[in-house]
Image 1 (spheres, rainbow, N blue to C red):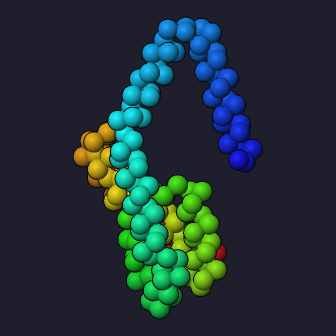
Image 2: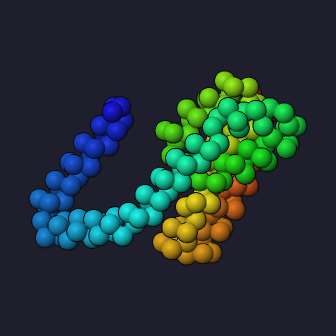
Image 3: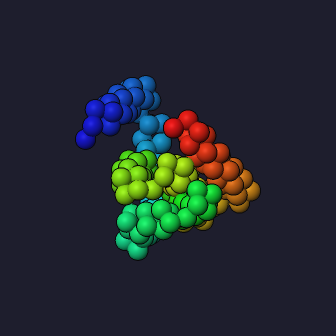
Length: 160
């Protein structure tokens, strides 16, 4: 575990302790509500984790690199962005994966498009997001995230 994660846990426990000291009844009720919500979302979360594993097994970085390396920058960027939208992956998984792609020869612009859509857009997580936040919100958030991911990729290409 890194220092940042430890600090998050320590901070959480401190604030939980303060909350418990201030009003134990409300704190217990809030914890029960949080665990109930977590239990309700567990199936969706495990489905997402399973889908991530399956997708990364079917599309290993070497295959992605081989495809993206043979295309023009525009085609490789759009293809990489579309591949990245398949699932929403946490940054601590996405960054090493994209590092592998760059090391394998994928250009910066397609790699950044893949990274940003991988962390900001999620087709697999869409049903969970739709259920929790509503269809309109999920569509707008994912559409804007995709658009900004493309803009970020080309901006990074210009900077690098």
